[in-house]
Amino acid sequence: MSKIRPGFRILYMGLVISFMVTWMNGCKMGRGDDNLSTCPNIVFLFTDDQRFNTIHAFGNEEVLTPNIDRLAEQGISFTHAHIMGGTSGAICMPSRAMLMTGRSLFHLEMKGATIPDDHVMFPEILRKMGYKTFGTGKWHNGKQSYARCFTDGGKIFFGGMSDHLAVPYFDFDSSGVYPEENKKIGKKFSSELFVDEAIRFLEEDNGDVPFFLYVAFTAPHDPRMAPESYATLYPADEIELPPNFMAEHPFDNGEMKIRDEKLAPWPRTPEIVRDHIAAYYAMITHTDYQIGRLIETLEKLDKKDNTIILFAGDNGLAVGQHGLLGKQNLYEHSVRVPLIFSGPGIQENSRSEALCYLNDVFPTICELVNTEIPEGVEGRSLLPVFKNRNAEIRKELFFAYRNLQRGIRTRDNWKLIKYQVNNEKTTQLFNLNIDPWEMNNLASNPEYSDKLFDMINLLDQSMKEYDDTMDLSLEY
Image (cartoon, rainbow, N blue to C red; front, side, top):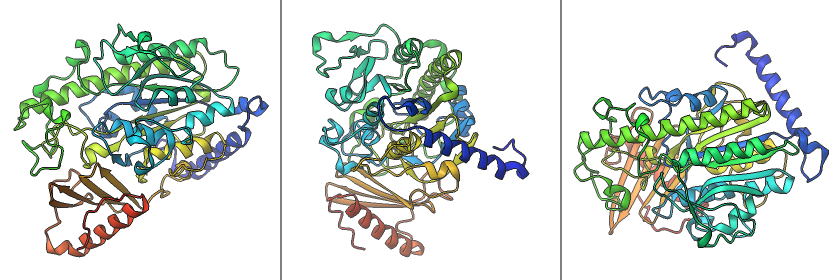
């Protein structure tokens, strides 16, 4: 958009909106409907543990992500997309369940470990419309729910993490049973394994109906073991430490000794953190290369012009920030994720700071293919931002982690986090406008007592709204 002369911007946006309305109105629900041919293909690229600021196009000069950068240039980026948190240390499990169902955290089943039949998932919606739905990669929400979503698939990994060079996978089973004796072991790096399967699907697709292709990577989740040619791109001694690097977290947040935090000794040293960041970036760049292979295939097969590509991460990761390594916390580095929509009718090279959740993807896809949003979906469509990047989706975001941490963030960039660990209570208040790295806790500063009072009340209201029954003793 920045390349368009100001005098033509209104005209340009009018044409974009007109194109989208015409296209959406032509895409109709119902198997066998002639209008189904006007619906776009959809490719969803979903990475594992990728933080929001690990993309070169978003200002990270150290990391190399040319293909994700290209998606950002060709579409709209939501730079303030978040997850709601998790009721399990395996954050990816509830995060993916919220994405698929459009539900909020406390309305999931078994912390997202399973998705019951009455929790409709957006790939189910597309499948019922007549879409060909194909999945490959990670699925952490039960085997039966996978069978409901997809008409086909391959190289499916049921679980949270694995050795990237020996991924235990299943071939697609329409019954959803997946007996253990059918498990196989991948002989390629995980990201390559999954993209190979996605490319196979694209090459075999005859284009008779639109498709939904879901590629769920297990990278850059640890073990961080990128191929040597990618690891050498990031000499650890040249990596810059984040401004909020700490040797140790200043207090017990309730998850100081969880698996993720044991990946490095205490106190954290600059050398150890640089090693972890370097390995993290190498994994991201290797995954980016595989994404490039998939995009090139779409172009080669003349499918890209009618394909919406979504790119997102399931949660962030500390990797040395605040003395932490994992994602079992409510700091921005762990709850904020990348989210990009790229494709026909979507404004190019556009960014929005609208506050949103990953579960907002569900209703957005429904509106993009012109079908009804089912009951139970709590996400909010992002389509208003497609038409006006300054549109507001939410005034605040609520966060929760187990029965240990609760948080709230407002549109004007104030953030509150409250902790209750072993009957010890800690409160943090940050002004993200001047403190984006969450380093200066203002909670005990009397100058901000009114703001603290307002934020505590807002958190209390949000907990009630989302049916969170934790007692934080919020009186001030």
